[in-house]
Length: 239
Image 1 (cartoon, rainbow, N blue to C red):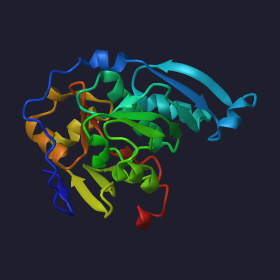
Image 2 (cartoon, helix red, strand yellow):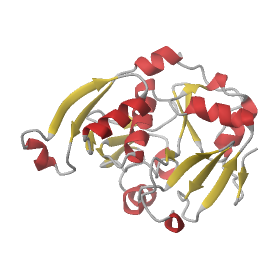
Image 3 (tube, one colour):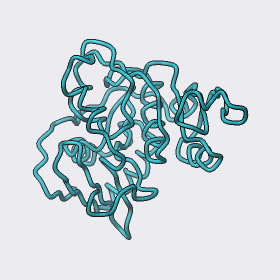
Image 4 (cartoon, helix red, strand yellow):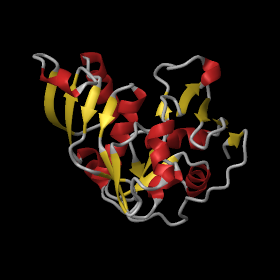
């Protein structure tokens, strides 16, 4: 069980996860993205500032690291991204991509879509906020408006130490520290970073991580929610 500085009561983990897409189908799911060197849209019109539109596949972590090294600081996803668990693989893959872009401080223009109210539960509030949320839970929901108003880099971040993972989570407001040191949990986190079929994660581990709101599910796949701490954006006491 992960240890936490606060009680975690949210129940999100299914004992019988839905049928998943295969790992190959998951990583081969292509996402279209527009890339630029600058956060301002007008700057993309300047010669040499835009990287154009790409259709990308594969593992996101090394790809986003390479894009960041190349100078990418702004991205746009032209297709809406569904947040709900019953959506397809493209939605989950897009959200993992947004997590990695957020971790690299790359601004992301995107539109979220939600039909079951999950957008207002704060699960994704640490990701770069969407321009709007379409669907049954839309911009009129104060919780969704708060996503953009309260966002900051490092809102839910994790770092690895020798034999443990520490998560610093402020999605609910107050800082919650979660330390994970069980070998089975640590092994699962390594798989979850890019996304893994739900049935490949042992049920007790799924329950622990879901109860702590550290994983999300789309298309039968589970993926790790906290952003990696590639660098601290604020002094340690502020994060």
